[in-house]
Length: 416
Image (tube, rainbow, N blue to C red; front, side, top):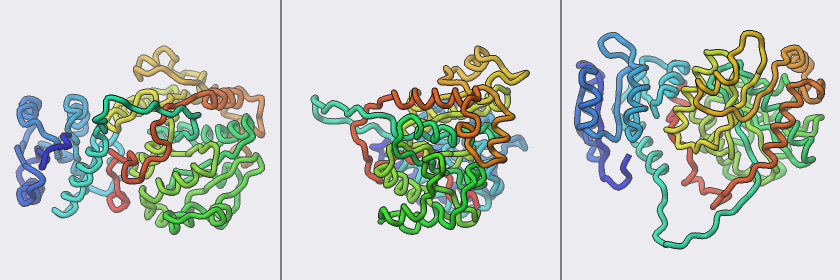
């Protein structure tokens, strides 16, 4: 999307009716947007879009009675310079996740107002402008600083892949290997499991820091964060879903930056929900550990997220694809997995369901309860490899105004 234009070119793809009228009315009254085309069908769609050269494409969830999910997927691949905004029929987080994995960079939910639509589009332009590379006018540049890896967000687009188990044990392995301060940050705001997995009981959680996000002090953080017997520190997500829903991505980022100054390493349990908070954590982390399983459904979702990562502006080396439950009977073979993903696996964690289940039910990390398990050994090796990793960083602490909380344009009101 151009950053020098005074207006953004928009193409709307929706059938004649109330939705089309609302989109047209909203855009024709705003000088910052130019509605260059309204398309009511997919006939000659690619040709028309190439001629229109849109910065933003707004597309309804159905055309002619058929879902447009595959069309969104095609648009994201063929027109990566255009931000796709989907119009969804209801407040359904699963549907929202599907359109985002298909390549949409934002959405609005029916019924929506013109103000809602314009707000999303303006936010889209703002985020796209942040993505634009900052070009130096000088022919000389300072060498980039080299620093060790300090944070990783563990995420999977498919539920049940084992992100919480991997994140928990990775944090324990990091603490064992270094003896340094390691924080397990429960970024999975809805239905988090760390309290159960680590048998922790605490009155305070992430929500208590959100209230003071802009002026955190050491004493408050000490009161909220729990210390586990394994040596790691844990920041739990809120147990109340309504409170969790009210946590803003900006506050989450501010808290993460503050904690990064206090801890040597942070492991984020980022779960499987694709939302603005989860993408914010992936943006902020040095690396994303993308967890998948050796089954076609998990590989399908992982492949879609890898495609989405390009729209999010992630460099290929930011993502570390890890195969969990490797070697399970009937699983897809490694060569076939890499062929499906078009991505080389960073590591594999052998399947050990008995150790994982017993550890969960006893509230003990697998590395503590079953240190000789093949899965525990694999996670320990991953930790060693991460500790050997170095990054080039021109700026260690990006300003909040420059942070890359970008394309997953999901607000709490939209998910509500």
